[in-house]
Length: 141
Ligand SMILES: [Zn+2]
Image 1 (cartoon, rainbow, N blue to C red):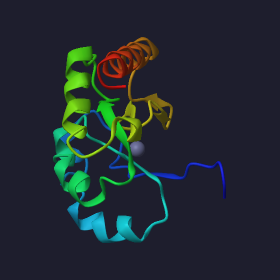
Image 2 (image 1 turned 180 degrees about the vertical axis):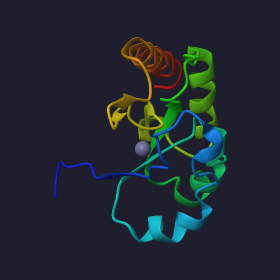
Image 3 (image 1 turned 30 degrees about the vertical axis):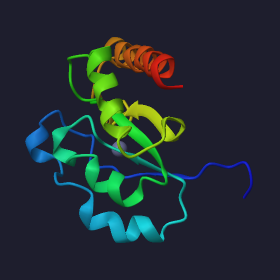
């Protein structure tokens, strides 16, 4: 299909603020499946240390686009622009600047009428992502 960007988000679960009950481990076991998939962009969680380091997927599949998770949708603390820029700069070791897309680790959605975050915090996290995107564009574009 021409003009359509196909991406895959691997969701580790976004239903609890308790990081200890959510799935953990890097993406190494999924690399064989990722290689077989005809997807241009892998949308992965890298704001939480539970997901391991970006070098695992970056070394193996740095020729794809990365939907880089740069904020944790479950935490009350809003990531700083500097923290987000640092995550992007780690990704630049494996990906061209135009192949990096910034996003939250997962959506800010609600489950069973219980939201993982409040609207003001979600909006502040999205603003931080936008500011960081501007900063890295100024630096690397
Ligand atoms: Zn998710």
